[in-house]
Length: 111
Image 1 (cartoon, rainbow, N blue to C red):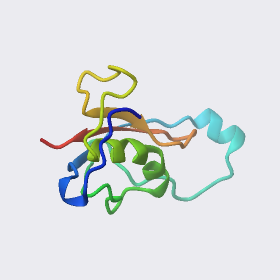
Image 2: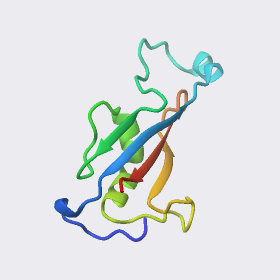
Image 3: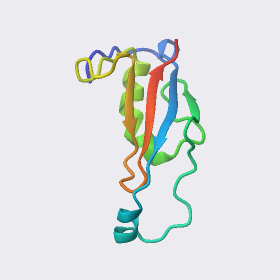
């Protein structure tokens, strides 16, 4: 990641994490996944706020592991991922690593 400055906890940016979309690939689930009772509690439009680059309550561990490097970068003042990928350089569109039920998140600095 590029552009990150080492900020103290007091200087860290507040981050907003919005659940933008949930997908479900039933064909892959039927073919490869063992049945599970409960997969994901997240809902489209759900919002989490992250302070000091700490995982918000209610956000699943798997999603956090996927988005944390970007959250940390943004919280420390970085951004402009992949040289202009996002229209807002202080944001990133990311997804969790669940190949059966991926969830897309908009991660952005709160202004």
